[in-house]
Image (spheres, rainbow, N blue to C red):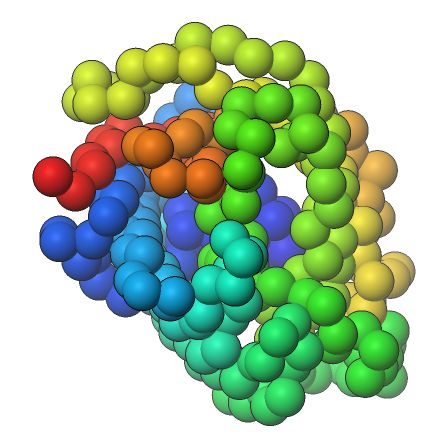
Length: 259
C-alpha cells in the first residue's frame, strides 16, 4: 500500500507550508469517495535554486490505510530549467511504519543515502545497483514538471526515473487529453493536461509482493497537470488510480500563487 500511495502522489502522505512560497497547494486524499487524508505542498523558486516542502496525514481506512503523518522536503539547483535535487529528507510515523530517509544528490546521481530503520528482507529484494542511482529524481522533485512548451502533449510524454531512498522505479507518462478543471477555492480555473501514468518497478522492491505486481499491471493511473502561473513548470492538480478495493484520488482544493 505504501508503494501505491507514494506512486499515486507523494505529497498526500508526506516540511511545513511556506506561505511566502511561489506556489502553495492543499490536497485531499479520497478512497472510494471517502476523505481519508490531506496534505499541503509549497514550492519556491530562487535565483538558480528551488525548494519544495510538503506535509500531511492519513486516517485509518480498514486494513488498507493506517493512521499516519509525515513530512518531506527537498532543496536543489535549477540548470537550464531542469530541477537538480541536492538534499532530500522524509519522515514518516504511522501504525505500521516509522522512520526517516535522507539523501544527498548531485546532478541526478545519488551520493549518500541514510535509511532508519534499515530495510528488512533484503534477500527477497531486487538489489539496487550503482547504475540505478544515476540520472534519477526524488519523488517530491518529480512533482514539479519542467514544461517549456506548457500544456502540450510533449509535456506529458516522458518517463520519470525515481528513487525514494529505498526503491528505484519508473513512472511512464503519456498524453491522454486536455480538459477544464478548477480547485474548490476557485483560485485555479483553467485548462489542464491529462496524462496516463504507468508504474515500473526497477529495484529495491520484493518482486513476489502482490501489491507490486498489481501496481505494475495497473493501467488506470492518471495525473492532471496544471501550470504554475507564467513559470515554465506544471504541477499535479489531481491524480487517481483504480485498485481492487475501489478508487484512490488525490486532488488539490487550494491553489495559491505568490503575489
